[in-house]
Amino acid sequence: MQLARKDLLGIESLSKKEIELILETAKTFQEISTREVKKVPTLRGKTVINLFFEDSTRTRTSFEIAGKRLSADVINISQKGSSVAKGETLLDTAKNIEAMGPDLIVCRHWAAGVPHFLASRLKASIINAGDGAHEHPTQALLDLMTIREAKGKIAGLNVSIVGDISHSRVARSNIHALNKMGARVTVAGPATMIPAEIEKMGVKVSTDLRKGIASADVIMMLRIQRERLTMSPFPTLREYSQLYGLNKEALKGAKPDVVIMHPGPVNRGVEIDPEVADGPYSLILDQVTNGVAIRMAVLYLLSGPKGKAAL
Amino acid sequence: MKTILDSTDMQMAIDKMAKEIVEEAGSLDSLVLVGIRTRGVPLAQRIAGRIRESKKKEVPVGTLDINLYRDDLSRLDYHPIIGKTEIPCPVDEKTVFLVDDVLYTGRTIRCAMDALFDLGRPDSIKLAVLVDREGRELPIQGDVVGIHHPAGRGENVKVNLAETDEKDEVIVE
Image 1 (tube, chains in turn green, brown):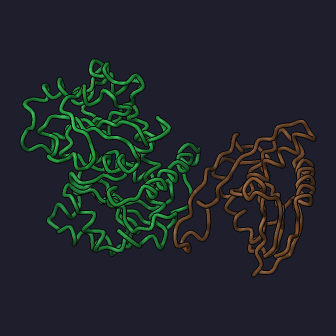
Image 2 (cartoon, chains in turn yellow, cyan):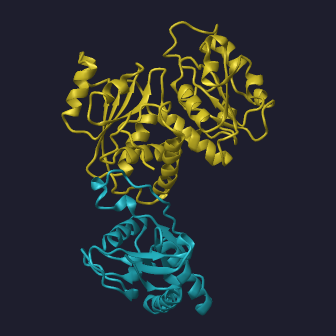
Image 3 (cartoon, one colour):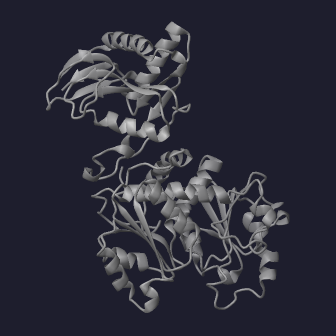
């Protein structure tokens, strides 16, 4: 079994077997991060460029640490402080970066499809680190890993994704990932934040938080992305928080062994109560730890010289 | 295909290796056996079993995957699937006996030594192999060797173990 592809652009095009391979590889990489010397020489001489057109702490740092633990050279380029701010086009930026010979480019962009655009024009492997409201594949993979660790399995679990489904690439990648792995997905949120016909992706829909999480084994809370909202889909943040915020009260109707996840950054007191975010059923920090292992696995599997076949 | 060890021969060879490892190690308190994946692992466990019987002493057994340290990663079509590395105790100040099935070029052992140094600083590293087939490309030798069997470049020396291959034998193809 190999990851016979040049790029990782989304979960939608991955097979269950490929997902399993990435999860298994990530599991073996966890051990490296517990060593005193947290480094193996595997990607010595490879160059990874983090090309971020959108703010990020977790994902960018996570890819950087993952690359460095595998001995790759990691360079960060962000929109602020680069020539992009001077008006250089995306393709020009990319071609110039390519001329410096990177092996892998980790790309985040506010527009959906940018990683695909780069993947078809550059020789380097492209890893999608979030493109608009489209996909964020490594987030879904680390979520799968965290769920499997906590519950021992993924198939057959009920997973509820709560919040702004419309604008969420995390939700989209997770719906694909969870469906492929055999979990049952419910999305919950205000009707204004749930895309029309989302049922076609194979999910149940609820506009009531309590009903939406009643049978859940896993609850994934999404961030209210204030920076992405042009027109407010709800009257006030306070009202959203009262109706869709996850607090102790709302959790009373959930299963006693439910676990709670959040891709971060958390808006404390908006979509999730501090008590819940820091509670014993919260896996938020496990997600971050597993993120490094997942990104190590993806960098490793895409670095084979002939991993250049399909998209 | 030629059988160079059958299951009885193999048991005798492993008995002999266990004995020699105890002698080489000096103190059993600081001895750790580390099997190199895949077939070094059951071999190390069997050796630990022999030591348990003869010396009434439990010697820790670890497993090591060397793929992340290979020198030919950039020549492989795909990066290999990685197995778990798990050593039950710190290797610092220990006598680590690496255990593998076949010693050929020595490159695997070089990887294993590099991997061990990333896990700590053992007092010494020694090497036990079931079959030394010669053909070294690096200055590496076995401290404890089950059998010597010089094999040509085109030949394949294959160790089958009950744990992984249903049957104990060493064959040359």
